[in-house]
Image 1 (cartoon, helix red, strand yellow):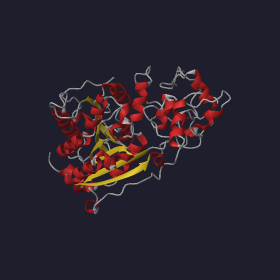
Image 2 (cartoon, rainbow, N blue to C red):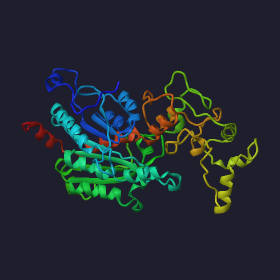
Image 3 (cartoon, helix red, strand yellow):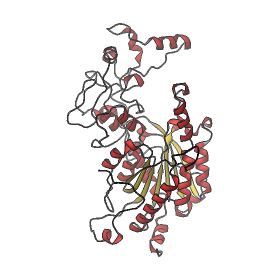
Image 4 (spheres, one colour):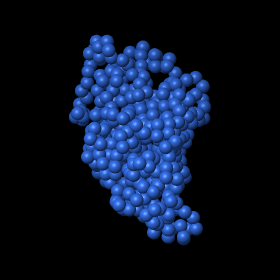
Amino acid sequence: MARAISTRVNGPTRKSIASKSAIRMPAFLAIDMFCGAGGTTRGLLDAGGYVIAGIDKDPKCERTYTENNGNFTLDRKPPYFFCRDIFPKSEQHPEGQQLKLRKELGALIERYRRLAPGVPLMFAICAPCQPFTTLARKELSQSRIARRRNDRNLLSEALKFVREFSPDIVLSENVAGISDPKFGGIWADFSSGLRRANYAVGSEVVCASRFGVPQYRKRSILVAVRKDKAKCGLAKELTLRLPTSDPLRTEVAVKAAIGHFPSLEAGELHDRIPNHRARALSPVNLQRIASAPPGASNSYLATTKFGDLSLPCHRRAAKKLKVSCFTDVYTRMSPDRPSPTITTKCHSISNGRFGHYDVSQNRGISLREAAVLQSFPEDYVFHPMHEVEGVARMIGNAVPPLLARSFAEFSLKLLDRRSFRARLRSPA
C-alpha cells in the first residue's frame, strides 16, 4: 500500500537501523525525477541503490510505482512517491509546487544522508520524451501542444534541484533525437548547466539491445559526476566517455524473452498472469494479422487469401510519394531478433510491428509481454489491471530497467571512493 505523502518525514532513527544486523548499506542513495511507473527506479534498486523518492506529476502511476519497488537496504520501505508539478508557482504554472517539493526533498535527503553516511547520492532525471518525438503536430490538440512546450523546460527546472542538493551523480535518459538543433539545444543547455555546476559530463546515443534489453530502442544517455568526487583525471576531461554496450549482457531475441508465456487470443485476459492481456481486434484486422508472416513488411496485405487488405490511405500515400509507406503496421515481430521500440501504443498492431511472432496466435503482444520486452521483471504488476490504454502508456513511457541499471553501475565506477570516506569521518 502506498505511503501517505506529507512534509513531515517519518522513518527509522539512525540508532534503530544500526541495531538491526540484517540491514545492509546501499551502494548509493537516489532521487528519481519523472519516475512514471518506475522503470528507472527498478534499475537503480537492482544496481544496489536505495531510492529515497520518486517524483511524477501523474497520480495514476503511484500504485504501480510503490507496490513494485521496495528497497532492499536500510529501512526496506518503498520509495516515497511525490505527485508534484516541479515548476515554480506562477501565472503560467498556477499548479507549480517547486518550493514545496524542494522542502520535502531537503528533509528526506538530510535524513537519509545521516542514515547512510559516506554513501553517494544520485539524481536520475529522465524527463518525458514526447516533446522530442517526430509525431506530427497536426495530430495534437492545442492544449497538448502547450503541455509539450512546457515539458521542454523540465530539464532546466530539474537543474535547479541539482544546484541545490549537489548530488554526486546525475543520470539522464531521453530519446535519441533530443540533441537535434530543432529542439532548441535543450540537451546541450542541460549539459552546459551541469558543467557550470562543477560536473564532468558525458553523453552518448546507445541502443538498449546492447545492454540486455530485448528491444531495439535508441536513447540518449547523459552521465554527470561531481568533479570533486570523480576519480583522478576524470575531472580534467572535457567529455566523459560512456559505454555503448554492456559486456556482461548479451542481445536477447523476442522468442527467448516472451516465448514461454501462455497463448492468448485477441481480446483475452489470462486468468492467472497479471497484465497478460491482448487487445481485441476487428474482423478485418484479425484477417490482416492472420496473413502476416513473422518479421516481414506489410506488403503481404495486397495479396492475402482474404483479398486485398491494404489500407486505402496507405495506397494513396504510396501513389503520391512513389514509395511504400507505413510498412511496419499490421506486421509481426521477428522471433529471432530483439523487438522494435516499445511505444505507448505497443498493444496495437495498427501502430507498428507489434503483432505476436507466433503465427498460431493472431493478436498483438500482450501488456505483460511488452513489459518484459522493456526488461521489467515478470512479477512487476501494472495498475489498474483492468485497463489497457493507461497501462500501455506506462510501459511505453518507461526507461528500461536494465538500461538504467547498467548506467547506474557504470556511473559508480567513476567515483573516487576516498572522498566519501573523508565525508564519513567528518563531523555531522
